[in-house]
Length: 154
Image (cartoon, rainbow, N blue to C red; front, side, top):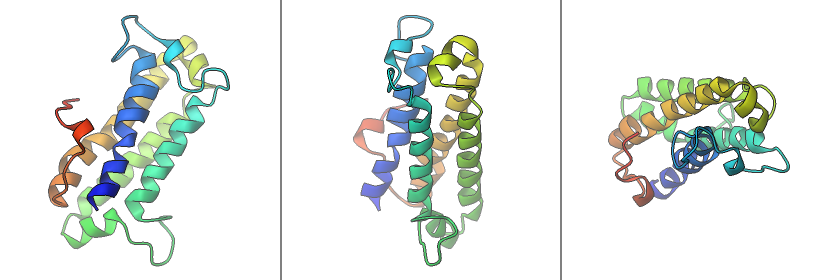
């Protein structure tokens, strides 16, 4: 369980921090924006990549497709441990993060110049997912944060 939950931190470190925060100039960028730090700069697939990361996170959370018969995931463990509210909060946060990312107009490169607020909203929505991941999720399931996430205070 710990190894799979460690993999879920990809959403925080790579998707949120590297694919959104860095180009937005939130972290790791000396300028107000760093569009050259966008993933897939030439193919303009940064946005679809982040959406794929969110959907993969959701699959890991549910142990497969949410509506698949017999799929057991972390959501089921949370329910079994009396934390159905945390499972619901996580699903709501995932849904909001997908919606916010889909709402970013055009490519991430276009959004950086035309509507950076939309990208910031996607970043904030993904952060809501990772905040639950780093707090209630780990605590209730008695899992450990991966070393690369230790000491991260955002």
